[in-house]
Length: 132
Image (tube, rainbow, N blue to C red; front, side, top):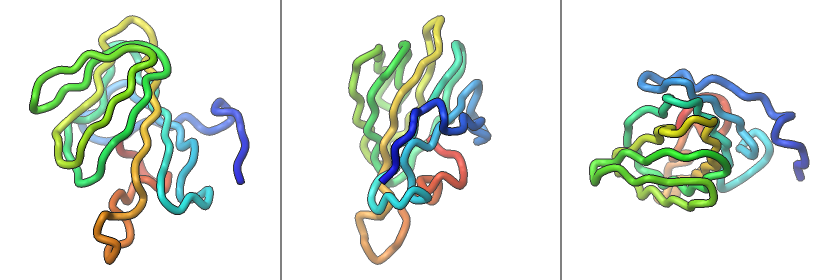
Protein backbone atom coordinates (compact mmCIF):
# COMPACT_ATOMS: atom_id res chain seq x y z
CA UNK A 1 0.00 0.00 0.00
CA UNK A 2 1.20 3.47 -0.82
CA UNK A 3 -0.52 6.77 -0.10
CA UNK A 4 1.11 10.12 -0.75
CA UNK A 5 0.47 13.46 -2.38
CA UNK A 6 2.04 13.73 -5.81
CA UNK A 7 4.02 16.83 -4.81
CA UNK A 8 5.78 14.77 -2.11
CA UNK A 9 7.28 12.56 -4.82
CA UNK A 10 10.54 13.95 -6.27
CA UNK A 11 10.33 15.75 -9.60
CA UNK A 12 13.36 14.54 -11.59
CA UNK A 13 14.87 15.78 -14.84
CA UNK A 14 14.42 13.50 -17.85
CA UNK A 15 18.03 13.21 -18.97
CA UNK A 16 17.52 11.20 -22.15
CA UNK A 17 19.01 12.55 -25.35
CA UNK A 18 16.31 14.37 -27.29
CA UNK A 19 14.37 15.56 -24.23
CA UNK A 20 13.96 19.26 -23.51
CA UNK A 21 12.35 20.94 -20.49
CA UNK A 22 10.83 17.63 -19.32
CA UNK A 23 10.59 16.23 -15.78
CA UNK A 24 9.08 13.08 -14.27
CA UNK A 25 7.57 11.90 -10.98
CA UNK A 26 7.51 8.13 -10.35
CA UNK A 27 4.07 7.97 -8.71
CA UNK A 28 3.87 4.17 -8.48
CA UNK A 29 6.67 1.88 -9.61
CA UNK A 30 8.37 -1.42 -8.98
CA UNK A 31 10.26 0.16 -6.05
CA UNK A 32 6.84 0.60 -4.38
CA UNK A 33 6.03 -3.08 -4.80
CA UNK A 34 3.90 -2.69 -7.94
CA UNK A 35 4.09 -6.03 -9.78
CA UNK A 36 2.61 -5.12 -13.17
CA UNK A 37 2.54 -1.39 -14.02
CA UNK A 38 4.30 1.89 -13.37
CA UNK A 39 2.43 5.19 -13.20
CA UNK A 40 4.47 8.28 -13.96
CA UNK A 41 3.55 11.97 -14.09
CA UNK A 42 5.44 13.95 -16.73
CA UNK A 43 5.71 17.73 -16.52
CA UNK A 44 6.77 19.46 -19.73
CA UNK A 45 7.48 23.19 -19.77
CA UNK A 46 6.24 25.34 -22.68
CA UNK A 47 8.40 24.60 -25.72
CA UNK A 48 9.56 21.32 -24.19
CA UNK A 49 9.25 17.75 -25.45
CA UNK A 50 10.12 14.14 -24.75
CA UNK A 51 12.54 12.20 -27.01
CA UNK A 52 11.21 10.89 -30.33
CA UNK A 53 11.52 7.13 -29.94
CA UNK A 54 9.84 3.72 -30.15
CA UNK A 55 9.80 0.62 -27.94
CA UNK A 56 7.94 -2.67 -27.58
CA UNK A 57 5.59 -1.60 -24.79
CA UNK A 58 2.47 0.54 -24.90
CA UNK A 59 1.78 3.89 -23.24
CA UNK A 60 -1.56 4.75 -21.67
CA UNK A 61 -1.88 8.48 -21.02
CA UNK A 62 -4.25 10.93 -19.36
CA UNK A 63 -3.69 14.66 -19.91
CA UNK A 64 -3.98 16.33 -16.50
CA UNK A 65 -3.13 19.92 -17.47
CA UNK A 66 -2.09 21.86 -20.54
CA UNK A 67 -2.09 21.08 -24.21
CA UNK A 68 0.23 19.82 -26.87
CA UNK A 69 0.55 17.20 -29.54
CA UNK A 70 1.78 13.67 -29.92
CA UNK A 71 4.22 13.50 -32.82
CA UNK A 72 4.10 10.08 -34.51
CA UNK A 73 5.14 8.52 -37.79
CA UNK A 74 1.42 8.81 -38.65
CA UNK A 75 1.42 12.60 -38.09
CA UNK A 76 0.70 15.01 -35.24
CA UNK A 77 -2.21 14.35 -32.92
CA UNK A 78 -3.28 17.38 -30.84
CA UNK A 79 -4.41 16.84 -27.25
CA UNK A 80 -5.68 18.92 -24.33
CA UNK A 81 -6.62 18.62 -20.66
CA UNK A 82 -8.91 15.66 -20.08
CA UNK A 83 -7.86 13.73 -23.20
CA UNK A 84 -6.85 10.07 -23.13
CA UNK A 85 -4.13 8.68 -25.41
CA UNK A 86 -3.09 5.13 -26.20
CA UNK A 87 0.27 4.73 -27.93
CA UNK A 88 0.70 1.23 -29.28
CA UNK A 89 3.99 -0.69 -29.13
CA UNK A 90 6.63 0.08 -31.80
CA UNK A 91 5.06 3.41 -32.85
CA UNK A 92 7.65 6.21 -32.97
CA UNK A 93 6.38 9.08 -30.83
CA UNK A 94 7.07 12.04 -28.59
CA UNK A 95 5.00 14.45 -26.53
CA UNK A 96 5.32 18.17 -27.29
CA UNK A 97 4.05 21.04 -25.17
CA UNK A 98 2.67 23.51 -27.72
CA UNK A 99 0.84 25.61 -25.13
CA UNK A 100 1.87 28.42 -22.81
CA UNK A 101 1.41 26.50 -19.52
CA UNK A 102 3.07 23.42 -18.06
CA UNK A 103 1.82 20.21 -19.69
CA UNK A 104 1.18 17.46 -17.12
CA UNK A 105 0.25 13.95 -18.19
CA UNK A 106 0.01 10.56 -16.55
CA UNK A 107 1.77 7.75 -18.34
CA UNK A 108 1.23 4.11 -17.42
CA UNK A 109 3.56 1.41 -18.71
CA UNK A 110 3.83 -2.33 -18.06
CA UNK A 111 6.64 -3.79 -16.00
CA UNK A 112 6.54 -7.26 -17.58
CA UNK A 113 7.05 -8.25 -21.20
CA UNK A 114 4.23 -9.81 -23.16
CA UNK A 115 6.67 -12.74 -23.45
CA UNK A 116 6.71 -13.73 -19.76
CA UNK A 117 10.07 -15.50 -20.15
CA UNK A 118 11.78 -12.12 -20.12
CA UNK A 119 11.38 -10.24 -16.85
CA UNK A 120 11.21 -6.55 -17.69
CA UNK A 121 9.90 -4.96 -20.85
CA UNK A 122 10.77 -1.50 -19.59
CA UNK A 123 13.96 -1.31 -17.55
CA UNK A 124 13.03 2.29 -16.66
CA UNK A 125 9.62 1.49 -15.17
CA UNK A 126 11.12 0.72 -11.79
CA UNK A 127 11.91 4.35 -11.21
CA UNK A 128 15.66 3.90 -11.34
CA UNK A 129 16.20 5.65 -14.67
CA UNK A 130 14.31 7.97 -16.98
CA UNK A 131 12.20 7.11 -19.98
CA UNK A 132 9.02 8.33 -21.52
